[in-house]
Length: 341
Image (tube, rainbow, N blue to C red; front, side, top):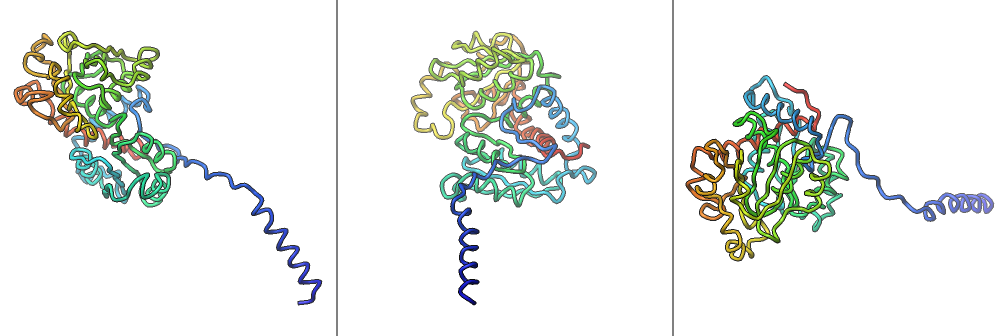
């Protein structure tokens, strides 16, 4: 190559290369979902009308589940990510998705979300090979980041902050037994945990009365309480006396006193929460023989509730457990924008 041509080539190459080194690369933007698809991270991501739509959809799909006439998830895959162990969450999502024509796969702690691999990287990888992602995690920030970087719907199967799928199943159960959740009094007795936070999220958009009876120092999220008070469709009241709380209740709800990650506190909590046991005496204090008893399970019988209450005619715990599958099926149909039956 002549010297002049070589010099021109070098100059041209330098001019080409310099901007690449000199330009600051902008960060990759967050993902966006296709039109008609949604994430489900909090109950109040839905409007009141959308909560009603999902509940009615669950009631429609439930009796035809597993029939060849309705397979909206045919040729679709669901990835389930677990950092917290589960019985109901895995079985309900996996069975439901399969019975509606799809295939579900389970990813456990070995993927090391946020540790072995960045959460946003996992989000992009899963989204590239699946139609929907469900995650049951400790940190709420992880579910938010999964959704931020996923271009397929992400469904919150539980975090330390909330448990929205459970509350949709609870609302479905109440509607099956009492006709409607609207206007009902739901009383939660125990620790102001992620279950309570999701009940408060529901009260933001659905008109019912929610009461949480808990010891001082174990209250639910203050911001959610304020939000219900300011703009909620329902009401929320915090009390310390469980007997005062359950008067005229339509539903009494219990959960474990020490959640996952709090088991080292279990002995101390057992002493603090002993007056908050949902037993036969507390159920009688509702003044209603038809008051429902609910528990999200697993239950520690003899602690937060008794064998007698769990096995009573007022207990709808196992219908409630099954309804995890039916409520979640409806949520996935809704979030994917799949054809309705």
